[in-house]
Image (tube, rainbow, N blue to C red):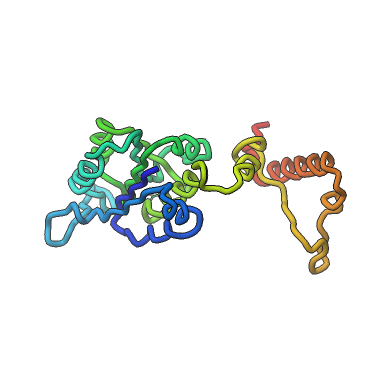
Length: 232
Ligand code: J9N
């Protein structure tokens, strides 16, 4: 998979060289490009923003640098591509979105700042590439960089060969068999630590009873923290 990011803060993306994503880059499973939006400006001050037409607070990102950046980065054919525009007004990014995006050959993230990118940029881009406006969640960030990094990690770990043991993917919250439940609590050794004991059932060796206990725990936790996931 090929990943490109357009941003005015390229330094955020040094985090991509760490951990699983970093490994995937090293092994050639991933190709990454980080692009400073200001390289597509032409004025002395490398201006990327302007005041909103119609009035209002804050600044809006100008369409011209984005247009030129996308012209350049979409010029070559990279296979099935999706342009992702991170925005608090986007569709919610979910595990299902992550799984879907993992099937693309190329993802291009447009990371906005200020009050957003002039709406014509998404309109123009949609003439030549699939565009998704996605939100990381119902809170406001200063820019799209952190959202793009979070989405990247959620997608990349689903690519074949990135996670050593695919079973660990199937068992977790929001996917596979426990689709609508949070994960049950987990323990490791020692069996007793600072006066706190691992639940006895987990030491019993009764696999069916352990599976039942975990399911009950997951259900109770979900009822308490995320009743919206149960839908009843
Ligand atoms: N979920 C989400 C995205 C954002 C952004 S993108 C660009 C600025 C703010 N905030 N929250």
